[in-house]
Image (cartoon, rainbow, N blue to C red; front, side):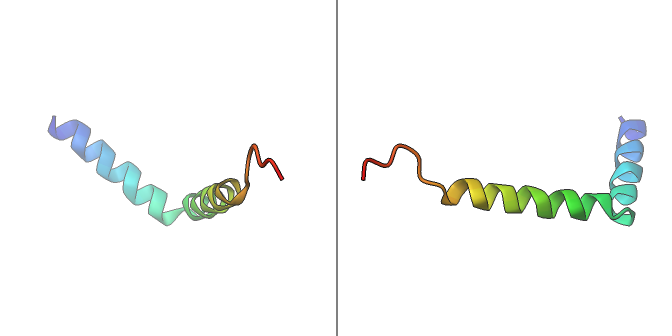
Length: 44
């Protein structure tokens, strides 16, 4: 179990170092906000 925890911590640290994580996070937030602001099935 400690091996899996060590690998997971290395993966998380590498995510923070790379800029891809921040770009993906911002794009996900923007898409979520845009989809939340749309109104579906508006009658009038």
